[in-house]
Length: 210
Image 1: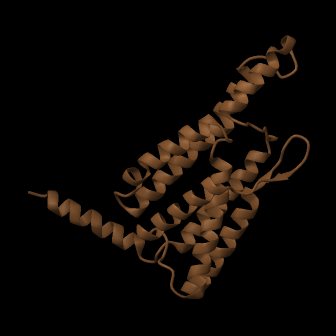
Image 2: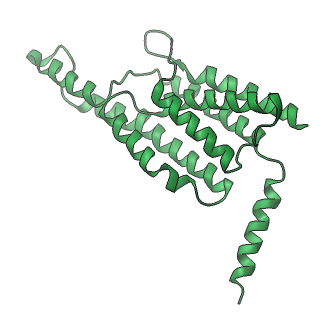
Image 3: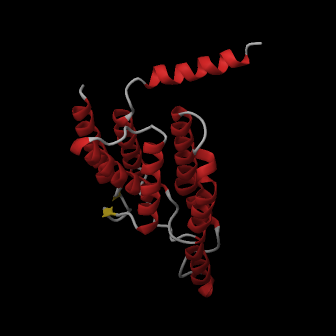
């Protein structure tokens, strides 16, 4: 597959990822959730980091720039999928990522960068789809119950996270979006990366030999 063909295939994978990531299967229907300012800024920084570290090919020609543009769009939608709902929890998570991102992602090989991003995605998914729903159901009575105490508890819950539940199959849709983003990233992975990483490991091993 030639470079322009890989760029077009990556752009299509990213476009499909962005489309699927916004689909939210709520209990009473289907919503489409577009990304906001926070997710967009993070996506720009992520795309710069991936190109800077060589995980994505540096864009050359129209097809290369189109692939990176769609990759940025898909990254923003994936961040919308993974970040906690608006509230104090999201603020804490975003602040933590912003403070530690450069130090965590700027060192090591491209494979380590991708592994770090996958680990971050896993932790965010656990927080949004496991921890928050459990806490939501146990933080006080439901709204409209307990002689008004439920409404007060609802206000506290909304302060921490404006949680909107999804149907169980909705998580499969999110997984499909992540898989499509990973496919697009693999298509943009520079050719010859195996030899380059192996060469780095050989140089390191030779330097450690007395």
